Length: 428
Image (cartoon, rainbow, N blue to C red; front, side, top):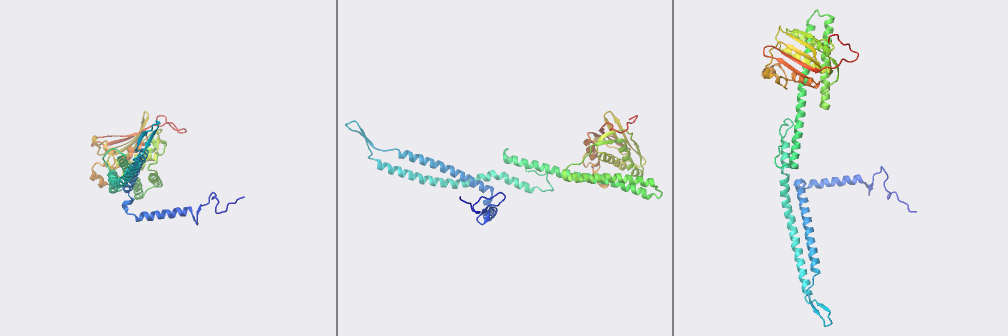
């Protein structure tokens, strides 16, 4: 019985194959490194796609031409070898006899013809190979010129300015579609960067509101030497709600950094308590500005959405009203229901808004007078955020205002049924 020595057996599962004194992985690594060293010694132009296309094109053309010439040569040789030159005689017995008197001359003539054909064919193939190299280099350069344009355009595009585009012209071929794909990708990247910048502006803008509420309430309470325990508790509750909103914004910032989207809860929200809490937050800032803040929010009004986001929308409207309303006037915060809709409104007696600007006030970074907006540190994002929150809840925000007659902003949201276990008001 023949035995297999350990060195000649097949490698088992999990074993590394051995070639000589080295494993297969070591051999592959050495070959790869050797190939890299050879590639580094070659000129840079020999590693270009243009050079490789030229070599492939010339090799293919040379191979096809050699195949065709070889076929012609073989066919011609076969035809000549089966031709004879001679005279045919008929004997008295009636038999035909062929006498090849010129066979020798024929063979020499055919041999010279084939030799001449070989020489001319070899010369023609050699000339064709060099000509194909020149033509292939020129044609590949022409075909790859759009790629050079794409490369140049992409290098010129900076991360801080993604508005530039390749805009490659020419026929609608693969390279044109490649350039258009790059343009579409740049557009999406530009939108992503712009969205990120806008979110940072919105986050900083929204963080200022609760910070202002906390600072104002603390200043008012600390400046009152006769503040009671109830006053201190009320201030602490307001600060707690403001810090809760700031924590929500920070969480949204982290979620956006990971997923690119804001978190939005979907739960039943009682609008009356929501409006009352928002009015309580801005009572101290309104009194400090010489304003009277009134609240009319009946209970039993329910919507489905994010309570903190809706409070944020009301806070933006109240912050604008406190900032714009003249001293000695009033601000009213109300809520109600009409059919399938629940509304929340903030009304002030400020300077009002021209009807031509009713739509522009909800646009990003619109601040009315740009110089005044910069001096006051406004970002022009507050009302934009209000509209986004309303639309995210399936509703809308409306504005009624005229110059010199104040402004009224109202959020209209789809009404929701009263949740189980909640009391239904007698007169909703």
